[in-house]
Image: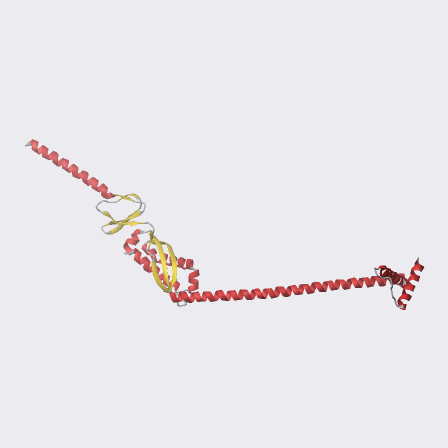
Length: 297
């Protein structure tokens, strides 16, 4: 009987130790949480927020605390959204948008919003329509980066209470309906034709201006040449007059007689000039010239 009691006590003690070991192992399993680098764990105690566990080894109180939400902090991309908007010049456009975001404060996200993707998509759609409604089509097509920046800033302010950071918001494309596209193409062709005509007219105008400048330059150069020739003739006349004034009329007559004799010699020495007919007045002039030459010698 004593042996049976001892055996029963031994078995009971072993069972207790085993149960205690199991309990300890279970407490360790429940109390230790290893969080991956890409996640954050939201811990609740009796249904209320207790803590947010970051990456690494974390300890919680077993059976009192529990991990209620495992939230990934990876950057996420919403599906490309297509939406209609109307510009200030009443043009209907179809806009393609792309949004990237990440969760920075999981405790806000899990308790304040149920469907994060749908909420952000709806918010972005409203802001995009509002921004496009403030500008004309030409401004929209040439300033997509500005529109994307405005959308990103406004979305960031609105989703801040959800613990979300919008990292990128892009306007991928702005599409027009066929009628508007055809009208814009016609307008573009007309503008190109107008520019070509303006360029041609400016070219003709420039050619006329250059031609007029060339004629004016030629006239100026011709005038300068005539002035130089007149100045030279005036200088020669002044020189001769000075010589006459200094040497007297006789010196001038001597030079004239010398030129007459030289001319007569050239005329007599020419081929086929055997007979030369001269008027009496010319002979008298040559006679006077010979007299003056003889007197000088």
